[in-house]
Image 1 (tube, rainbow, N blue to C red):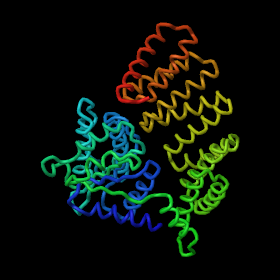
Image 2 (image 1 turned 30 degrees about the vertical axis):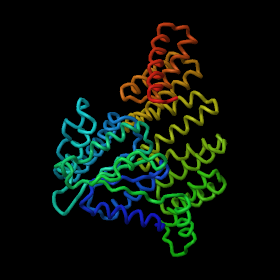
Image 3 (image 1 turned 45 degrees about the horizontal axis):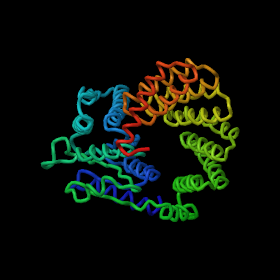
Image 4 (image 1 turned 45 degrees about the vertical axis):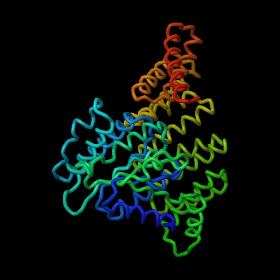
Length: 418
């Protein structure tokens, strides 16, 4: 592992072991979150007795974020119970009703979930602790995010639900929100790791060239270099490295990483606007992703194939791929991905002049976005409906849609958005 990551791991382990601070606020850019999550994964799988629950879904509002968090917890709880049943062991206690009660505040539901996991799912002996990560890739409702985090801090000493718990929170390094507000808080540790590309790449390049580097470390380092080449639009270099990685993961029979690398090859060709080649690679990624049981990657592949087919004007195929993405998003309880899939199903149907079906999908996307307070997809799908109602001369329907769009516009002006 590169020295930068070794220090990162050491710093995170030090926070986990200390007993004075409840919360660690990590300031990092959106693109750097994967490094943090990766290191926590390394700590968890290297013999740590602690339980790690890390949630990296985008934050829009506390309510939808808490609901997605609880849904993901439910899935992990169900999988754990099934595994215990197969082993003939006693199953976990059921999740308390309170965590799913949306009449309660999002923060109260989170606290209830944390208390349940720590007290019911973690062995009481041997110092087991719960690491609860609130680590959204993107923070959209900034003020609401700050309020939510503040409410998770103790007011009059450590509360019962906080014992044996560490909360890890992401702040945005590009536009700090939490750090300035909580930098002097008694129970909070602020952490600003140097994850700049220069700091990481120097270490990574040394690891790739070092003959004493293990095969697995070499592959991890080469993967980071390939991703960096891709980000810098050095596509030929990225392709060369991904090809090396694919051969390595084929030789080691690592199906999961084969799927990841093949999909990444598709991304490179997509960025190069070589859509036919991108389509070929994305299609090749389906079988290994399926064999490795990677529903999140399958969702990504389905969306990728949908966008390629749409650009190639293969609208019937695009509709099929986005329909697949919609079903996968439903299984994963990924509301944002589901609204996006419904939107693109509608756009693909519109190109095939299936106007009634397009309207049905956009209406479904609107209802879902409205119920979860997701303003961006709500606005986009309302605009699609407005356009089609205009072309079809449906005045009453258009009037209702435009009234809601006006409300959104007024709200955006109030909050200083464009």
